[in-house]
Image (cartoon, rainbow, N blue to C red; front, top):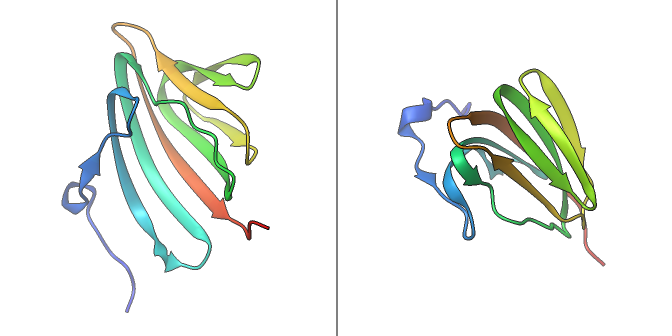
Length: 114
């Protein structure tokens, strides 16, 4: 059977180390082999929490709002209608200033870890 869910029926959570963040795993990892799709909203002042994923590459699809992506040693301004690839094993965090917000989808592509 197909996987069909309404956003409001999916449990929300916040990552450890985040501030003013709400996440939803809208396509859980066990539905499509090797992939997870999620939704994130951060309201400023806030951040996603430092991430560094050894077992998957991540892609952010920015829907609306704005923030700053700290990607390794780079600071990248984010705004609606952008796509950013986060290589596995790379430190990253998204920061949002007071009065701003950002909404984005994230796609995790899992890989074998040796």
